[in-house]
Image 1 (cartoon, rainbow, N blue to C red):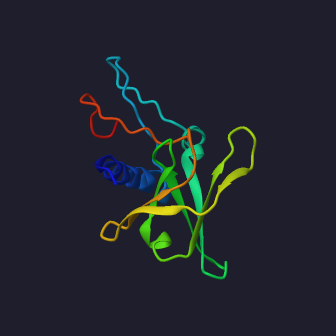
Image 2: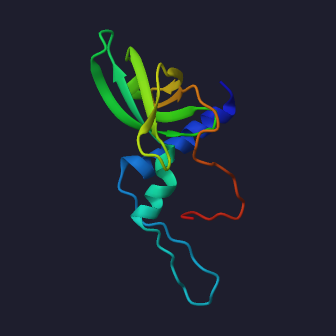
Image 3: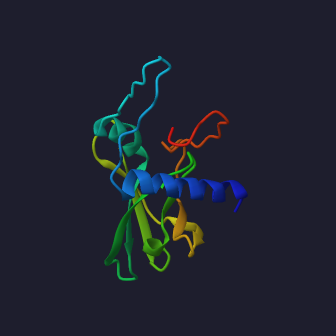
Length: 148
């Protein structure tokens, strides 16, 4: 596994914790005017932007019985997904589904494979067979400040 996936795993886990695992605080951005104004994104705007990138993960045992269910986040367009490791590490089968934009329903992915697992951080990276998937875009900026 390349180093870039490890970096993506860490960033995705942080994003997953903020977006899925906890309540999402309103995002604020300062304007350039001399008065301090804030633009607050609504819960609906946050949902509309990020929900196509959130996957539903279901695991089962050898008999096909459901074992656990969790959420994950797509971290690359070619199908890498970050999720909680304890949910997927010892299961027999892992399936995932993504929402279908503008159509309702979900698209299903079967037989995901475990690409990376770190027990200390409880991060797992799964690989689904997909291309051009909506994903969180990670970039580095020297001008971005904490909280932006």
